[in-house]
Length: 157
Image: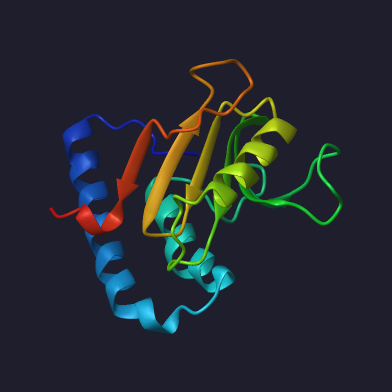
């Protein structure tokens, strides 16, 4: 479950910023050793979502490799976020060195999002850059442009 409410939200924000700074340092230290998409997920992406407060080890909350009847049997979304058994967001991961701006990656995310219409959010990430999408322009159709981009390299606290 994402961060629980605390009496002083400022303290929690400060803790999150410090944790992300540590993650930035870990990414810089381990970048050359991370040589696959799976290693990117384990070393960069899972720690990021853990710092956001998700229990990445609880499949009721953070489920890996989910499939849909609307996808070919060999295609799966890397992760899905759930709350109270409701799908909130799908997450598609790439190797840290992948340029996420390519049409090919957006088309893949678009297809996955169409297969999981109950998800109102989708994230494309390479562990460094996180692109957040939704269906603000048209219901159940993923927007072509992300509504928010977070680049962990530009985070300095």
